[in-house]
Structures are given as structure tokens and as C-alpha cells.
Image 1: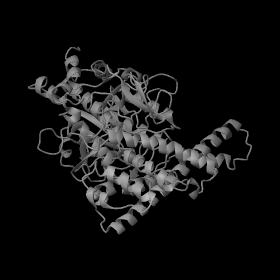
Image 2: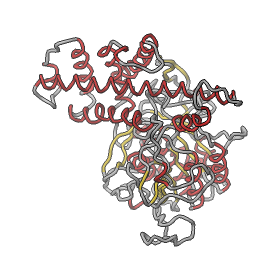
Image 3: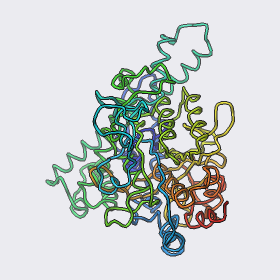
Image 4: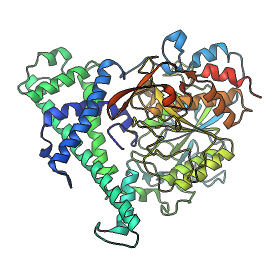
Length: 572
């Protein structure tokens, strides 16, 4: 998590916008950064830090107010057509009506490497991959693939003893490992270059921990002051009108009243705002402090593998759901939820078998698990792999590289979310990456940025990473309605939602044109984008900047199913 807008944690994606809104107000409420003691930082440093983070937050707040980011969009807008429906979807429904009617398709296995999938979800259970060679629950490896009871997929971050839910950031794990070697920062080992790198990373870690601690402090104080206001108001679930009638008793209460009033325009009631923004933000930063950035927390023992052996293959469990399957379930629904079944939503693809490969915790995924997840998917018939995750460091990148090469050798197309840091990933590292350590590039790989519904300057989602070299295409990723655990549905934002839109499109092409190779399917998707000719707005260091879409991705456009299927029909 390099900044306040990130997907380094699975849960952070849903919290991204709300946190920034709240932080905008903390500046006025706290107004005294020295109230908190920050290790190795002066009061002046703290004030500068607060100024930067609140300046950025203010920009995001203004975006919400001006409609750049909507709390909710029209359901299924990602599948709609720009000309017919006036939203910049990918024309899936038009393609089904005009191009695919009466055409036959073949099932395509799609692997979702993620947090797990709710395998009992009403709109997903009929489209899940089932390993027919394995007998459910008998505790035996019936198909002799070294994975016992892998009915709907595999779980690389758990065992029969339990599951990893929370985990560290990769930076935390690196510091924990390196401090064993370097000990005191004042030591002078022979490896002076390593010591220097350790110092640099240690400073980044301590800064990140300080940011999390002080933000948690600010949010907690905000909530406490708000609760005091509610007591005075005599109502813990006030309407917008009731809140407006309240007379603030100090400047801080005036600020809180203003922000909460603005937020109530985005939510059906105060209770929902409290749950989805305030409570979720507190929980998120507690997770950062208690788990993700805690050097004393290491949950890996529950997995039971030899973690120091990055090439170890066979460990884990058959629990394809895990303790927190929200993210993976949402991703799976976008790809292939049952279509036209009078339930929930319509996925992009209509003939898929979704394989759940659990490798992503609430924290940073580990390279070993990602590599094994890719290999498992490839070995068990996946034609497309969705990867809606990412991190800033990859200490065992070579292991992931070899797995990617292996999957591509088996004609698998890999699709990866570009990330939600509003950064240029041509410059800022983001892993996993299609660029191998030796400088070569993965051929069957698509990197995806997120777009919104409106064909104007707001088209590029302001949180989306970009890169005219590193990102291939943009796809809908704002206000996407999809499945969540317990046969529920909800709106989420992020490149994590844009990536499965493209994955669904790839699966759709491979389903109706099964003879096409992974590289051909990639070529079709990239060549058939709807080019964006008008300028769009991005944000650099919190400041708006007008650019062309060709500055943000290789193709300069948004994927389109109708055009892609038309083009696919011309391929031999």
C-alpha cells in the first residue's frame, strides 16, 4: 500500500474513496499533528505529511462531489453499449443479440486467483469448475495430481488446520527477514550495499507504519466526536434533515456535520454510511497496524509448507472459499455469473467453468503461492487466468516468471489488474509483472486499467494505474455490481473489477472460437478496442492533468466485445 488509495489489501479497494473523504476532515479536526508522537519524525515532518495527505484527500472529495466517482451505477452497465445505452460498456448484450444468436459455444475453464469464491452462491454454483476425477470429501487424492479433494479448485494459503486470512505486506516480510541479517542499523557487515538497501526499506516501512497509526488515530477521534454529536442530537441514525437542524457547538462539529451531510447524499441512510465508510475505515487501518505492518505477526505456520523453499509445489487444502471470499466472489460474478436466470447479475461470458485458486490474503500475496496458483490453473485446464491483485515488492519474482512461462507454454492467457494507486506503472513497480527479470516480456498477458461509464473527461477512473507501455487496455471498473458471499450482491470499484471484464471477454472469444490461441485472443482484444479520441483527466500528486488515452495505455481505448467477436470471426 504505497498511499491512501491502493489495492495492496483485498478489503482496501472498497474503502478507498471513503477513507479519503474522512481524511479531508481530519485536517481541520485535529489541526495539531503533534498530538501524536511519530517515531523518528519531527513535528515539522508530521505537519508536512498531514498537508500532503489531506491535499490529496481533498481532491478525491471534490471528485465525489462533482460526480467523477459514483457510489453506485446502473446494474450491468459494463455489458451495455455506448451508442444504445449511453454508457461506455463493452457491448456484450449487443453481441449476444446480434452476433452470437444461434451460434454454438464450448465451455472454457477460467481460473480466478484471488481470496476464494463462495461456492454456494446462487448465481455462481452452476458455473463453477468441478474436478470430476476427484471424489468430494473422501480425504484421498483420487486423480493423483497431488491435491487432495480439489473439487472446485485449490487453496495455497491454508491447510486442513485452518486458513490465512490476514497477512503482512511484502515490505513487512522483507524487513523481518533482513533485520535478522543486519540487526542494528549501526552494524557494519561486509555487505554494505545490502545494509544500505535495508536502511532505505526500513525507513519506508517506518513511514508507512506511522501513516497507518496516525490515520487510525484520526479516524477513531472523528468517530468519537461524531458519536458525541449523535448523543446531543438524541438520534443514532439521523436523516439528512435532522442533521442539518443540529447546531454545531464548535468548529470541529461544524466540519463533521458538513462532511457527513455530503456523504448522506451518497448513501440511503446514516446507518449505511456508518457501516460502509466509518466502521470499514477503522477496521481497515486496524488491519494495517495489527497485521499488515506488524513485524511480530506471521500467520504462515498454519499453511504447513516449507516457506523457505520457494519452489515447493504441493501444500494447501481443498477449501476454495476461505474465510473472506468477498473479493474473489465479486470477480467471479463479473466473469461468468449465470446469464438470464432471473438471479442477480449477468456475467460477461455465458459458457465458463470458474476455478477458484485461493492465493491472496488480506495483505500481500506471496510469490510462492502466486506461482503455484498459476501452475495449478494451467495444469488443470484453465484457458484464461484472472489476477486481480498486486504489490510493490517481489523478492521471488523468478519463481513467478517461470510459472507464467509455463502457463503460456500451455496456451493460457493471463489477465492482470493494473492497480489502484493512480500511478504510472511504467515508472513505479507493480507485481506480478509481464516483464521477466531477464528483460523479456510475457506474450500472452493483458494489463488492464479501469474506466468509468461516461464518455467524457472522467472516463479514466481517477484511482486507476496507467502506463503507455505497461497497460494494454482500459475496461469498466467503477460502480460494478456483482456477486458477494451469501448469495448477496454489491457495488465495488477498482481495476480488480476491470480485469475480470476483460477475462470474461477473453473467455467469450475462446468459447465461440476455440481454435484461436491465447496470443491470437490477446491480439483480437487489443485491436478491437473503442479508441478514445477526446482528452481525459488523471491526477498526479493530487493535481488534475489532461492527457490522451494513448498516454495511459498502449491501445488508447476501452475493450469492446462486439468489435472483438467481429474481428475473431475473420481469424483462421
